[in-house]
Image (cartoon, rainbow, N blue to C red; front, side, top):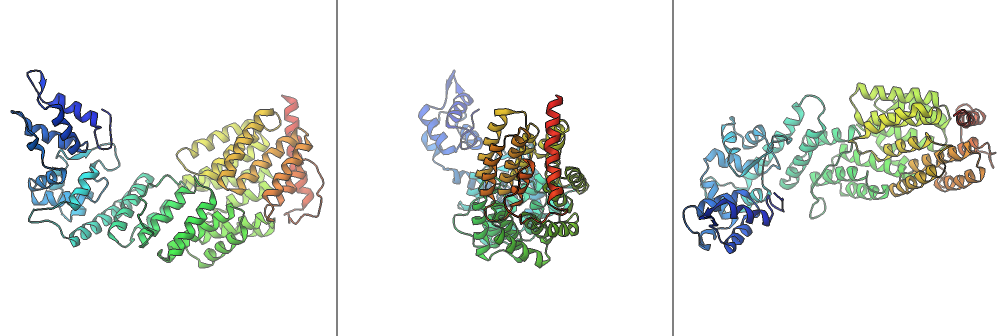
Length: 541
């Protein structure tokens, strides 16, 4: 059947009523009456089934269907036992639930009433869902707003107490689940944030869940309801914060800065979560090439010594590298360890120097550490960079490395890492792909521009320089250098201009501000060797 706004579309409702009750080969319910029933049903099979029951054995009249949906729900409540009514009201707080959540939210010690309730026709069941049972949204809202004539109807305080129990039940279910379960984490976050927002509850376990959401760099979609007004509680602010982090994979980084600034300005987040917002805003500033603003935020977070201090220290190492201060970047990287992803930072430093062997070793170590810690997001980041080093040195081996990076990225939402993998795939064909290379680079350039990620744009242009330098096209190299100059106009990433000239064996027009680890000449020699090796590879094919 076609599914409409409710469970059935209007056409499906009419078809169901036509076929469900027949007398002497003709539909017992006339077309105009079917239209009335359909309009009142909101597409719910429950309403349709009850309508059919009322028609059985006689010709129905319009008066049989004067009861609207809220009245139907009210009548249904009276047919339930007190425990079942208590369970039903409790589970109306959930998008979906299981017997344990239902029982805990109701504050009961036994599951019998919940087990009976899920057998009722108005409870929908999906055994393959994260939580197998759910109520239609219209039933949920009606239970909370319709007149309730039962003796045990709930007060506002009862609803808030049930919401508190429901939030605690979700948190307990997330905490006791063995092993990392991102699906459960996201589901608990989504439902928990909605409960905390709607009923103005304290964050509790939601803060730890927010950290868990960010730790793995997976960034799967986190569908959260938008508030009708601006944030008014910590739960509102946390919802906005996590939504901004998820959306940044699909928006220009300037929009991320705007969103995170708005969250911080509310002052509603507790200090440790405000630190999260400050760190990711500083990271977005760095992506935009706004190093002064990024450095200010990273320094604040690093000085706090909190949960994001190692990440901020890594950010400061990246900023030192962007400024061409490689000794400072290296000194910082060597202090980071796994918490600050030190191996990956070392790999970035070695790539800039053209030392792809050392870079590959560092990225391999980073990937191994990520595997040991069960961090899928970091594995994908390290693998994408490892594929890039292979693409510069061994295009044949790079095929497998790029494929593995793409496999690790499947199901993740890492925009910057995806760009790295795409550039690696491009570099494999540098020097011999002709117009196809140029077309692919142009398409990727449009995407990196739309993202606002400066590092991705610079890396792409470096790949294009590599391609033209292998082909000996110095005029085209100079055109790319002009684009690199525009991307590094703030002074950061100026070392990319040096690398471009090293690859093409062009002189530096002025003394470079870059402080290389072992001097400019050694760096030039390594990049020139990569060009020579690729040319030699082309001649032997």
